[in-house]
Length: 201
Image (cartoon, rainbow, N blue to C red; front, side, top):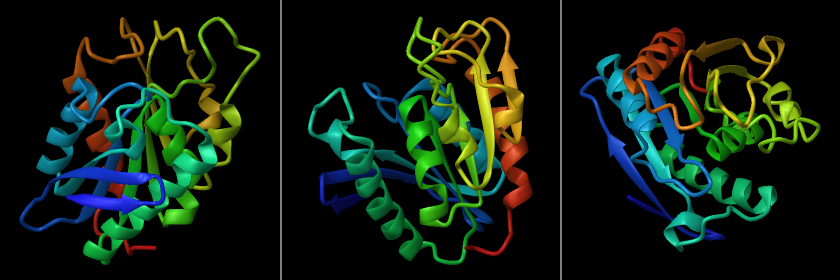
């Protein structure tokens, strides 16, 4: 599925279930793609739990760039993609999320797109070695409940539990969360189950 945005086309891979109770929209990090091990594991676990899952390759990655550009432009494109997905599944409650930079986008736009919750995988609390450059305000300002899943060896830091509805820290995991991605999927599927069948916003 292609969605045209003001920043170029986005590509959406959709895994539908027969009787969906939830729409889960996921996206990648700055230089990554939608086939990251943790995103695939979340997709697998979520579809088993009754969610239709859409994985979005954002326009900057479709264009071959490795950096997303300004947050305002990235968020503008994201809201257009989400509007198209909401039009296709208007009655399903929406949860959105992503890994790393994608988690930041999901937090910043949650209220604007009508999400009921956010899944933040490896939320990059700060650039490596620069804890003074905290991005915790994006978590606190999401306006909806946020699940954060981080590795205890992540050089981008681990958020404070007070800044999320739930924080799960996985031992031995780094920023890529690829040591045991199935565990990441299990954590997410368990958490998003609360939104199944809820009214859409």
